[in-house]
Length: 141
Image 1 (tube, rainbow, N blue to C red):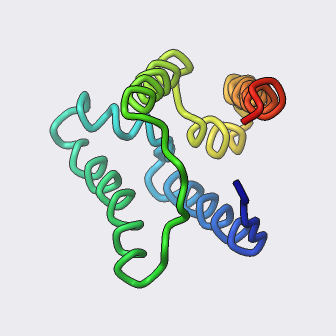
Image 2: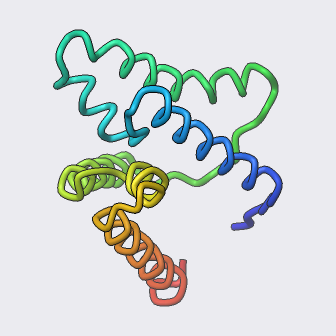
């Protein structure tokens, strides 16, 4: 498996995510954590649901529009459906248990100097390092 690292695209994407998160906080006082936004779309008062659903729609529409504009998505080997379903359930459980997702804690929480978000992000990163090590060096993937 080869990975093409494009530092300009990565830097540009990261800067846009940071800018969007900062603008959302400055203009609306809300945190751009995806799990909180999506969870609130189901649980929030009726008056607070619309912007949440529009936000989620934008997340779905952006790659669709990129494909229409001629940008290709990277080809990746996906695991079987049962593995994907279990992984999705574990991610959902983890974001609920951790009071947020990686975007909420890593981008927005650390920017607000939240000790809880710093601890969560360190835990995410440690788990990622261990997972990559095990998958590549122990299991030979």
